[in-house]
Length: 207
Image (cartoon, rainbow, N blue to C red; front, side, top):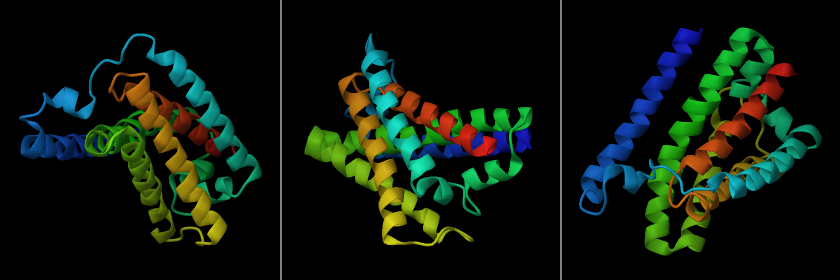
C-alpha cells in the first residue's frame, strides 16, 4: 500500500512538473529561469512568521467547518480521500500514507500547478488583488469535481458553497502568503497546504 501510494505520488509530481515545465518552455523561458517563473525558490527570511498566523487562522476556520458544519461529512463521503482514511482508521501505515499524500501528493503538486503556474501568471498579468482572487476561485471550483465522483456527496446549495468557499479561501491565503511573505516563493503556500492537509487527514483517520 505504501509502495503503491509512493509510486502514484511520484507520477503525479512528475506530471505537475511536466505541465509547469512545458508551459515555461512555451511562454516563460524568455522571461525568467524556470525556478523563478514557478516560485520553486527559497522564501525570503522571516517568511514563516506571517505564514504561521495565516495557517492558524485557516486551521481554526477549517476545524469549525469539519466539526460543526457539513464539511466533515462531505470530505469523508464515499470515494473521497477522507472517506478512505476514515475507513482505514489510525495505524502506522495510515500515518505514513498521510505524510506522503499531505506533503507531496496534494501539498506540493497542487502548489506547483495552482500557485506556481496559474497564480503567478494571473498576478503578473492582472495585478495581485485580481490575480490572486481569480486563482483562488479556480482552486475552489476544481474542488467541486468532488460532486461528480462516483458515490460522491449530494450537491446542495450549502454543500456546494462550502466545498467551493473553504478551498477558495485557503487558496487565496496561500497565494497571499507566497507573494507577501515568501517573495514569490511557493514555500509558504506549500507549508500551509501540507500542514492543513496533515491535520485534516489525521482527523479523518482518527474518526
